Image 1 (spheres, rainbow, N blue to C red):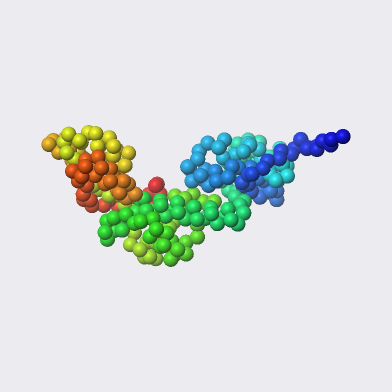
Image 2: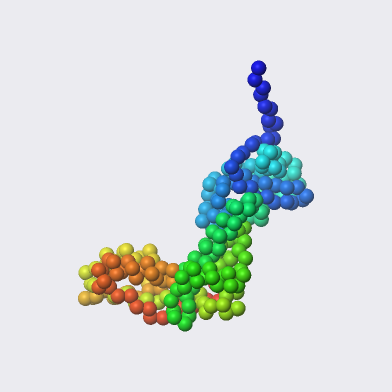
Length: 253
């Protein structure tokens, strides 16, 4: 005779999950999330909660499948709105990961922070972007510790400030002002190819040659020069006129 396993109604068992945990009012609350999606959500890469949460349920113990009671939720969060509670846990909770996963996670965040800095900053002495590997080395020299639970962009801003204060490397947040010259017949076609790499257009002139004055983020400079060279078979020209400093206190990336 087979035996049936009885699962209480307040137990929903899940497997292969990442858990976000928040202790509030003396009670532990947990969310069952898909692996890697919490960091993407906190970095605004992922915006759809359905892709982050395995289920829109608040638990007291995910591994045992024990869900939180309505009484505890109301007592601790002062609301019965489960969506608001979930958002608070996602924002403030601690992501639970194993040692190997945490190491891999930190390496990914370090790379993401360094990439963000390289995309938005230049060496003010050469007026050129830094390679990502050089930014990573500067982070290591500064003993900068990344936090997997914080936004990549905010950590990049913090890192830039520390690099400037400690003067590990000369660095400045800036955009590059470029003059792009293209063969007249190729101008419109190539402009469409590079439009996505340009932040803003300051001036343009159509004639025997097409000339464009624009601002680009440092991280787009290499792609833009390579695209111009390929699309014009080497007949196009990209010159750096100067750099435009990003306003102090501008927290946007």
